Image 1: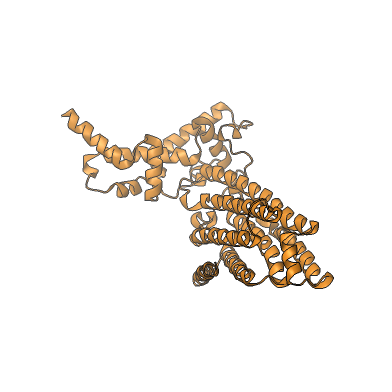
Image 2: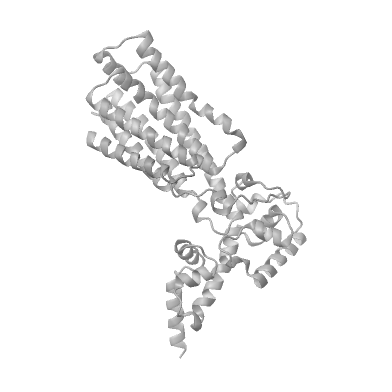
Amino acid sequence: MISLDIAGIAISAFFILFILSRGRLKKTDWLLVFINLGIIALLVVDAMFQRQLTSIVFLLLNTIPLYFYPLFLIYALEILQEHVHHRGRWVLLFLPALITSAYVGSDLFILHHYNQTQLEHLYNFPTLGYHLLCKGFPIVFLIAFVWLIKRLNIYSANIKDRYSFIDPIELSWLKRSAWIYIFITVLSLLGVITAQSQILPISSHSVCSAVGICMFLAIFYVSFHGIQQYTIADFYGEKMVSSNGRNNLNAATEITDVNIPTKYKTSSLSNAEQQLIFEKVIRLFDEKKPYLEPKLQLSDIAEALNISTHNLSQTINATTGKPFYDFVNSYRVEHLKKLLEDPLQQKFTILSMGFESGFNSKASLNRVFRQDTGLSPSEYLERHRVKQVSAF
């Protein structure tokens, strides 16, 4: 197991060096560095634990995981750009770790002086205080992770209302990371309870090692995706027009209902007003073809039509039953279908025709086209050729 710890330390160190070598580091980059430093510390402590349980090792085993949770939550909130003006309050997330550090530290180094046997017994059969702190706080963070997943769901719905290309900013990997942390926390709690109650022949050492390996794999996944992650501001720039005309990047995550059909049930626009706006949108799309712009935003259309983004989003959702993302991509699919059916375009690759139609990547092209037609672009092209041959 020590060899696995060494391998994990080496990989985390590589991530740290890679991140630091990029230059012009963002806050999320620094948070990734600290997260990887934390996993190195945890793996070092695990290796020490396998050799001998000391008071220092005991303290670190009980406290390091509690520093991981706030680091990951702050990292996720920073990517979401969630309530940026409340960043000062994020330090409160470290209170469980600080309280546990103070309690365990005072017990081990001030109130008592445990020998090796006593430490082993305390680790395997903790007192009520240890149970409350070391099991209660992780449960609190479980609730925080559930809240984070809910925010990510809201974010996912909202970016589809505002952007026509979401692959670099959709954060599905971050949601999966949150679920991984939930799984690790539940596994850790169940494993420790099982080992301490001796329900199954599982030792606390083996539980600690298993959790350490799972944590390393989770950090590897987060780091791998995190070093190539864009925020909305990174990819689209800081232009964000809210319904009253102010520049407001945080408006991208400030919605209260992910159910698109009912989001505007208290609409301030009449049906006639919505129909008038929608006719302007259709005319603009037919004449100017703005959907051919890969990074098209809702705010671009709102600016072109001189209406608020809120009213425009409301109109598109209410009239078509689709968010802006699906509405724009339906035009791109139709444009690509015409190119695929045009004999003069056959000298070009499907990917180049996809880029010409406004798609920004091969992955989004294939996914959106299949969702809209039930076929991949190549399957659609082959079916069209078969129809042409049959017609003759």
